[in-house]
Every structure is written in C-alpha cells, then in structure tokens.
Amino acid sequence: MKIVLLSGGSGKRLWPLSTEQQSKQFLPLLTNESGQKWTMLQRTLSHLARLSLENDTVIATSGQYKDVIREQLNISCPCIAEPERRDTFPAIALSAAYLHSEMHVPRDEIVIVLPVDGGAEPAFYDRLPLLARAMHEAPDRNIGLIGARPDHPSDQYGYILPAAGTGSFLPVRDFSEKPDRLTAQRLIADGALWNCGVFAMRVGYLLDKLAERGYPARYEDLLASYAALPARSIDYEILERESHIGCLPFDGFWTDLGNWGSVARCMDKPFYGEGFMDVSSVDSHVINELPIPVIVNDTSGVIVIAGQEGILVSSKRGAPAIKPLLEGLKETAASREAPIRVHRQWIDSRSADTHGSQTNRLDLPKGAAADTLAASQVTVWTVIRGHGRVIQDDRIVPLDIGQTHTCLAPGRFVADQDAALIEVVIFRDAKRPAEELHA
Image (cartoon, rainbow, N blue to C red):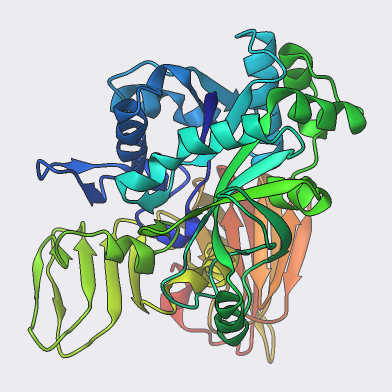
C-alpha cells in the first residue's frame, strides 16, 4: 500500500497562530514522549515510521510549503505540490497520477489518504495496514474508511452509518455531515461512527474517476490542466456518489486537530508563554507568543491564543465557529489600516461667502491610507500616480490613475501601491480649522 499524507491546508480555525505563511501542521503545538515540542506533521510521520511506512508515503501539499516540510522531517518523502489550492479531490487525484506515472505504482495497489491534522493514539495508525488488507479481501468495495467510536455527540464531525454485517469491515449505508447535537446523539445510539477523513482506494479507481470527468491520468498532463479540476472535497466529488464503501471501526481516542478546542485536548499543560492563570479558571488553556503577559482570572472553559496576527478569546465550544469571524475581519481589515507616512502638501486655498476650499497633493506609500478631513463637506480625489481603493461604509471602489472619486460622506483611500492624489476639499465653513489643513 501507499500513503498520501494531506498537508496543504491553511488551518484558518487555528488563527492567529496558523497563517497562510505558517500553517497549523507546521506549528510546534504538540509534545512528544521526550517532552520536546513537535508539529502535527512530525507527529504523524513518526507514527508512520513506527509502522515502517515512511518510504511508502508521499506528501500532498501546497508548493509554498515544500521547504518547511523538508526542514521538519528527518526522512525524505516525495512532495507533490499543487500549483494552486483547490481542495482535497484535486490534491488526491494529482497524487494518484504521480504514484502511477512517476513511481510506477500499479492500478490495483491500495492508496490510503491520511490527513496530517489527526490527533489519535498509536493504535489508530495500526489500523492502516488492516484497512489495506480489508480492501484487498473485499474487491467489491471501492472505498474503505476508518470510523472512530464517538465519546460524545459532536456537531463538528461527519458521521458514518454502517449497515448490518459480519466481520470487522462493515458496509456503509449512509453519511451525515456535521449534524446538530440532538441528531448526533440519535445517530450515536444507532451505531454511527465519526468519519476520520481516512480514505482507502485503488490507484486505478482514482484514475478512472479522472477519465470519467475528461481529465488526463498522466501526471505531467494533469499538472498542466490542474486549474480546470473542480475545487471540491473528495467527500462531495466522489464519496457521496459511491455506493460500494466499507468501514473499519476504531474504538480508541481520536480527534481532529482543526480548532483550538480539540488542540487543547492534546496539550500537556494548560498555559504556554508569559502570564498567569488562577486556580479558579478550570478547563481553560492559554498559548501566548507575545512578550507581554496574559492573565486569566476566574474564567472556565475558554481558550486564549495571543500571537503576532492577533488575539483570540473564545469558549472551547465556540472555537470551531471562528471562521466566519475571520472572513469578516478580512473584509474590514483595509478600513483599519493606519494612515502611515501620508504626506499632505497644500497647493491652493480659496474662500467664498459660505464655503472654503483647499487643494492638496497626497503622496502615499503602498499600504498607507488617507482619510477625508473631519470638517469637509465634499472631498474629491484624483489619482495621478499608482492605484488604490476608496472605502466608504461597506462599499469599496477601485481607483486607477486618471480616475476621480467624490466623497460626500467620510471615507478613506487605501494605496494598493505607491500612489499620489490631488485632493480638493470643500469645507462647511470658510473659516476651516487650520490644524486640519496640514494633517
């Protein structure tokens, strides 16, 4: 068998420590048996090495992560780099094409897809060879899964509903994707298992799925047409459409390290970094990467994460739900950019009976912002160099060289590259405040 280790995700739910540049699987959040810090990637590879599977493993990842993978691993695993991030189906399909075209793996070989962010005891990884053997012994099954026995009704996991059967490799009759807690409780009573995100398939099966969709099976050809592949997960693109599926149950500890609540379950102590947490703060965890202290007092069941990108304070139960908040943060980030090093140079001033006007030149380096003056009634910006965007309320208006925008309400211009503007300001009063003219 071969292992495809999925290690290309960005880990948004582990913000603020997990970022596009340093994703969650490369963060030293875990502790090994020797008390040393290690990453999800290092821990998963250690489990595979214990089973002598490291030489049968390839890593599917984003191209930007290839160097950090080589730095963190003591063993050499082929890295299959996606040209762009397009979810798990394209990544797995590209890996299958690589195995067949470049490593000459036969079509009937079993490939097991394993996510890098699983948190489980060693016995879970012992199931991988058993899953491959079960697939060999059941040629009518096109996909094999591992399902963990739930220890609580979670609304964060998908559920596998096995059908009645004999033996350990049970047929699957249905799935339920992240049900509410009451439904999860009912599913567990009916014998449902957590879907651990582990998929066993034959190489030829994956190549045939590509052919059915009109895509090439040769690695170099698929790589060249990668942008045309549907940006969908393996669950939605293949799993939901397949009826010949088997499931191998697992009765030990398993969790998905996809949010801070689940990471906390694997932490060896409740507080890392500068600060203090009092004894009345039960079941709370803190990771502080900042040089200033964090103090947690009389607050239970929370997670506090402080890093260079920001600070997160959340209940553990609410930790999985921060992704929409991050999207909102991304949308409004531009409006909070500081107007750094903006040079506003006076050009001309005129006064009328009821209004005054002033013409300025604004020079803004990339990333800087200029706000309308508080006393202005109308502000007209004309771009004479570079480009940027005007932000007013919830509207964002791109502005290129030669274009003009009139602000009848407070607004902000953000320079997307070094830019210069001619600003004409009409004030409510001809006797405008002098301190604003050269702000």
